[in-house]
Length: 83
Image 1 (cartoon, rainbow, N blue to C red):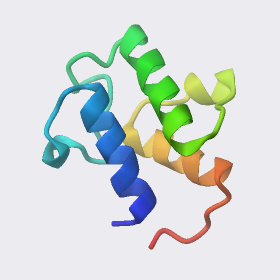
Image 2: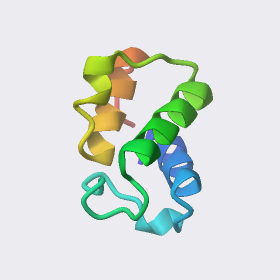
Image 3: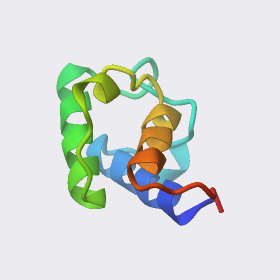
């Protein structure tokens, strides 16, 4: 798992007060307790602060899974390699 993904998973686990081992790429609002509209806002703010990025509103509305956030974050940070 890439360092970027590990760090993102840590942020998600912290925001939603869950075990790091329970975070994976397919999880999202449909199966993470607290990931509602307010939870999503809090998550986005934490990710932006942690990685020093800003997401466009279009990005935020396209986040349905952890993997969606990860892929957008990779693009924002201009990271091509997932190692």
